[in-house]
Amino acid sequence: MNKGLAQLALAVIIGILIVPAPAFSAGAVDKKPNIKILATGGGIAGSLQGNSNTKFTAANLTIDALLDKIPELKKIANISGEQIVNIPSQAMTNEVWLRLAQRINKLLKSSNVDGIVITHGTDTIEETAYFLNLVIKSKKPVILTGATRPYNHLSPDGPSNLFDAVALASSPEAIAKGVMVVMNGKILGARGVTKVNTYGTDGLQARDTGLFGYLYGGKPYFFQASIRRHTYRSEFDTEKLNRIPRVDIIYGHADSTEDAVNAAVATGAKGIILAGVGNGNTHPRTLQALIRARKKGVQVVRSTRTGNGLVTRGAEVDDDKYQFIVADNLSPQKARILLLMAMTESDKTSRIQKIFQDY
Ligand code: GLU
View 1 (cartoon, rainbow, N blue to C red):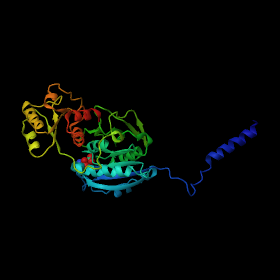
View 2 (spheres, helix red, strand yellow; view 1 turned 120 degrees about the vertical axis):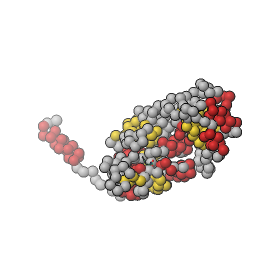
View 3 (tube, rainbow, N blue to C red; view 1 turned 30 degrees about the horizontal axis):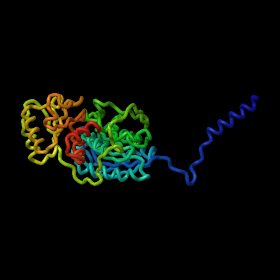
View 4 (spheres, protein in one colour; view 1 turned 135 degrees about the horizontal axis):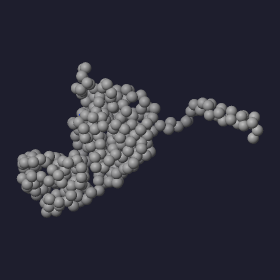
């Protein structure tokens, strides 16, 4: 090619590159995903009181007011908000969970919804995430997020967490990975995520099981996912369920008595989670109360207060003899949720134990 021709070709290529793309004409398709944001309250919808940088009220901003403060969200997705409740997450209940699950299952059946984001207080976000992980019947992304600093804090974490959650819910890589939580740039699976710090912005982690990945610049970087059953592979169904049985957690400690177990049974608990010392152990007095509770038909699950490790069957407690269940490596608060759902399926200890190995 001679020099003149080469210069002409170069000019044409540059011209193509710098000529602005034509605006989309009528009929062009909006490629942005449709993400529904379901709000439940929490610190992300809270505000500081007066001049204080410490005292705040959770859950006093509506989802529409919150979304108005983060216009960047509309650049990455077509978003719409819906207020489910507006509560601090320490006030979360089974009844709200059922409502949330039924609403999400309905929304995800629609081809107009590509993913769900749930705003939630961080105190119990891990519990709601795990509950939904067991009962959502879809491969579409369901992502929870929150904030430990309210929107009018000097350095709020809510806007970036919500942006990351919408980005993850919009991502094809998030499909079929189960319910996830996003906070401080980290992607955490519903089964492993737990709050490990009272108010720090990095307070959600996944001790034993580790991070699923990072979220950076609106893009997920995954290194792993859970192989346990969840969402579209779960047998649990909330469609016809309008009540969940009561399950209490009894915290283990030196010199514990039988009183807390007896009181739980007397006041109607159908299941008890022991947050035991070490490998799910407890004082012999408390153990005797648990044995009596089991004989009355109350399910007993041994878990641990340690935060890491498996509770192993039959190590120091004869689980087969007493018909107890062990919690695998689920935290007491996650074991409570799995037992709630397992009891809607079966009252057989062996069957419930299998569920604890699968989920
Ligand atoms: N305790 C409140 C809640 O969990 C606010 C704190 C927070 O969200 O981190 O909803």
